[in-house]
Length: 176
Image (cartoon, rainbow, N blue to C red; front, side):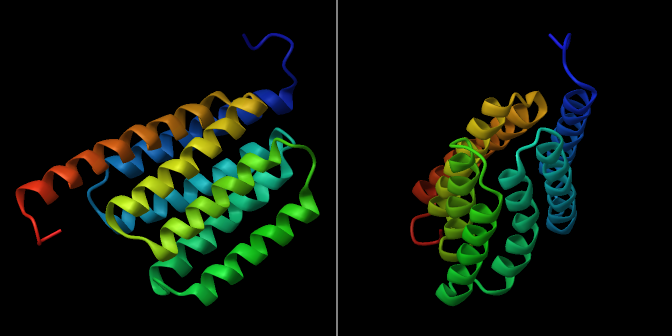
C-alpha cells in the first residue's frame, strides 16, 4: 500500500493519523475547552498534512479554520464577520489555487463558516456535516488515509449528535 510513496507522502500519512488521533481524543472529551484546544491542534496537523501532500489551498484554509473557530464563538450571528471570514478564505484560495480538487476545501470553508456563524443546533450540525463531506472528498482526492478517516469520524459523530438532539426535541418540545 505504501510502496513507491515518497518520504514526503509518508510523512503526510503519519501527520494525518496524528490529526485523526487528536480528533478522537477531542470528541471523546466532555470539556468544551479541551475539545476546542484539540480541534485547533488537529487543524494545525491537518494543515501540515495538506502541505506535505502539496495541497496548498487546503493547508491555508485549515489554518484559517482556527481563526474562524475563535471568531465564531465571539461573533455569533454577525453577517459582517462572516463575510470578512469568507473574503479572507476566498483571497487565500485564489492565491493558492492549483487544481479543481481545491473546490472541496473551498466548499468546506464556506459550509463551516456559515454553519458556525449563522446557525445553531441541528441546522449548524448539518452544515458542519456538509463541510466534513467536502473535507473528506479533498482527503480522498489527495490520498490521505488519516484525513479521510478523521472526517468520516466527524461525520458519524455529528449525525449521532443530530439524532440525539432530534430525539430530545420530540421528547421536550419547546425546550430545544
